[in-house]
Length: 466
Image (cartoon, rainbow, N blue to C red; front, side, top):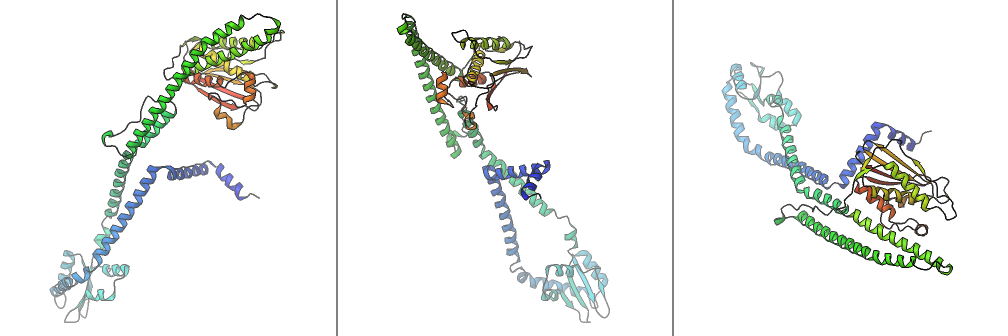
């Protein structure tokens, strides 16, 4: 038997029901999180409440005491009309009176029995609105010869007239609501500017400040925008100071590192110092690579980063990088380097790219895959595709992968999911960060996912052919 939960899941699988549920959730989210929508809903409720209170208040005010004030005048006028009909009442005068005034007449007596309408419209109105018996007698007169004349209001014309007043009131209310929405939308427009500016600042773009409307006499939103601009300027200054300091330190470190490496290579290659000499050379090489990566990362992260684009044979570049890595990982006893599977298109046009940065990108991706392929059932692979003006480079290893919670942090500077293992491999957490910067500098994207097994990194670069 299908349970209620199974029925709910089955209903949610239907396209129409699923769309209704999504629309309902969107409406709930809009009601709960949209300040503009909540303000407009509050205005609508306030407008409807004010209109209702005004209408009922005016009806109550007009209905209080008007009958007592107008009753003597109406009674005197009815007496005059009844006298004008004569005794016995004249049908011709009655017809002339009902044709001239919005009245209904019903005459009953020993001589004349006549009514102006087939149905007593005033009696119908009385039955609808429940007028008391004394009101009915107030509109009745008895002549000297025994005829009873009953006057009524002919409301047929009012009922037949198009009831445009209610629609006109609704149209005016909607118009006022639209004008109020436009005004509220204009008042809250700085919130959109503040949101866009905060997103720019978060992405590292401090070139365009948040516009402050009416800066001479700004409101609270204007003051908030000015405050965020000040905060953005301070953050930009701090980042520039950090970048400048890092560049200065990196530049200053290159010279002593070069001298230390030169002095180390000049040491005698004797058996007692050979091991220390090789270890020192490896450490100096790691420090040199770290300084180089730091300088390159700061150049690419700068808003003035310039790419030196030229015609690049991506297929030959990938094959060259793979050959270099295999040579670098080959052992001293002649054992070949690790295998790397390549899936390259047979015909790949020459593309306008920065060859130095693309080489760095491919090398870091493959080096990261090799570092995490120890004991893997298959060799890492690189796949290159070209379609619709976009170059796709995907590198996958078949290792253990990383936890899902760590995927968003891959590509951040100095982030290492496994610090001990990465340090053994010689990484410092800048390789994938440089790959992301190279992709962004070319206007592309950087994506990481668990391939189960292993980790897959996909780079998409828009590029023009030569």
